Amino acid sequence: MSVVEQYARAHIVTDEDIQEDPGAIPVVLRYDPDADPRAVRIDLPGTHEWTFSRSLLEQGLRAPAGSGDVRVWPCGRVQAVVEFHSAQGVSVVQFESKTLARFLRRTYTATPVAH
Image 1: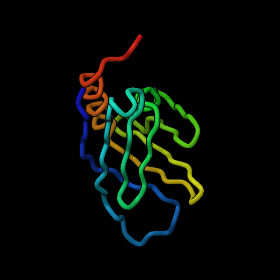
Image 2: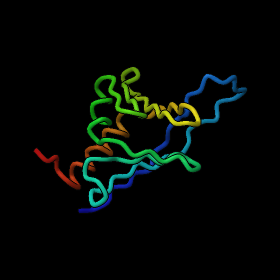
Image 3: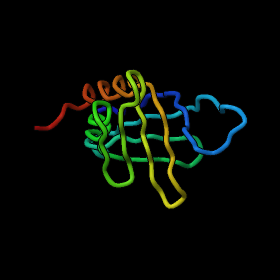
């Protein structure tokens, strides 16, 4: 089985008073079936790395879903939001839904869902 790695762009959503939009940030979406066939990883710039259930990501593209420190929900017709909770606070990251859906399709091609 092969590792699936996809580079994407996302927006950090914040309540802070920012003078200008920082724009899209580079994000790495990663799936390693040898490490854990049920998990995906999102690497944000810096040292932020989140591993969570692949099914949570899939469910969150259709309706609000959450598990532990990660929540995912659709935002309008073309966006999805992934919210990460840690001791340092909350990071809210907005993606294009089609980017996450494409990544998920590639993970299922790499290793089908076990029934």
